Image (cartoon, rainbow, N blue to C red):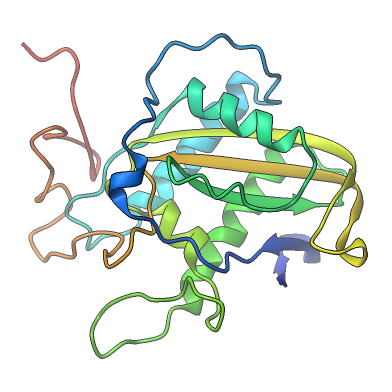
Length: 234
């Protein structure tokens, strides 16, 4: 299942629709995003692209002005390595590993890595407009019979603290069917920890008290609207 999203310059890109991406939080506790890792996989992510991914993700998270508990995202080489292993397979489907959240993007336009990142995050963020008002106030758009917003909600899931991504150029990127195979494609995967889209939870706590007003004890400091832990504190 896929949707077409028109991005700036009228470039159509194919964005994977999550059918089900909700987790039991207890399943995600065995992965350590800060663990030392041998950088054995070429992730296709330069230092500049890493900084761009972090800057754009955190900018979108800051835009949620009613969120009082939004954590700042930091880079995880371990997550980036896992994403690198996945995109090397050139199979456009979700890994469905409950240890981390996962957003995927593909395009058959030969663009720079910077443009790929820009277009992917625009497409994911546009999913916020798929959210319909709910009498319960809960967002529920990650199931098969609803228009997806799960990429957007993962981007702005407040409790997520770590991000790691990878990009690969695939001579043939496999889809669900041969008709959905994409030649000469760019495949981007971003992994998130702790994962978002957790069953019966909302992306963030809304408050009128201002950003960072509901930061946790583990991330008590504020970086322009995002909660984090200042490592230089005594």
